[in-house]
Length: 333
Ligand code: SF4
Image (cartoon, rainbow, N blue to C red):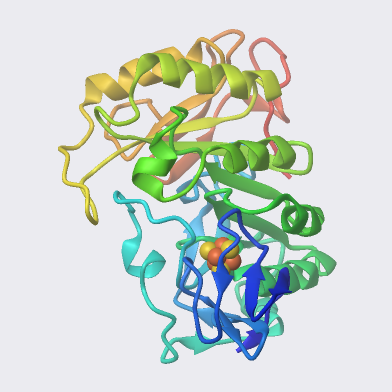
């Protein structure tokens, strides 16, 4: 086990200060995330360097559509999560136990993996994904600092449930984030995720000042597809920046929630509502022609065509639309 950052002693107990749960742990107890444990008045992280999944993925799979489109990114994850969503789409890792049979690596080993994949020209860096990377904090921070020095990008695919102080320490080494905003209604996080909405909102507001940000929302029929709430979310994002890409992802039954998959009509309506405020709204997890294409918001030109994970840049001249010359908010290199 590796000594954790962000904790304090409280009488005989340990309070973890990494995420808004602020778990108060007696000796031998583990926090809600399942991977941080109090031992002899010290907090330890049990999953430092523990790799549960490693894949070379297209960056579109994160999903990031406006950040190095078409590039591969080495994606790694571990065990544990600090939210307890009943609809978790990745529960075998998120709710899995830290398994010592999994490979344990050092940040330098991750750098070696990247070099073996062809270096920064071929593979832009690492995505910390699959489970929740913020509760892998110490390993992510050490690895991100190392990779940053070697010219690689660091990408977080996160639920955003992290306190501001650790986020601020990590953010200078993070190049892009996909943040899950699970709903905009007041009770959804409490009722279905075992958390609160406000810290996630704060994470998004902080992150957009420090790196490239895209947002994902899983649309679950009857639970978070209320048109008024969807519009409020899109309006809030547009106030931060109307160029923030929003990925509306179709729900399928998983883990403990057994509602039917979200109807296509609900997904299309959600896109229509969000598009009143945001320039780039995509549908994911759904077979609808054109729903993942990037269209110029000024003239309707097809900029990037996506079919599953095949990406063709069609209407861009640099980062400008090659029809109307307006600049498109996209990072190409
Ligand atoms: S990171 Fe884990 S131990 Fe720390 S407060 Fe959050 S859930 Fe609790």
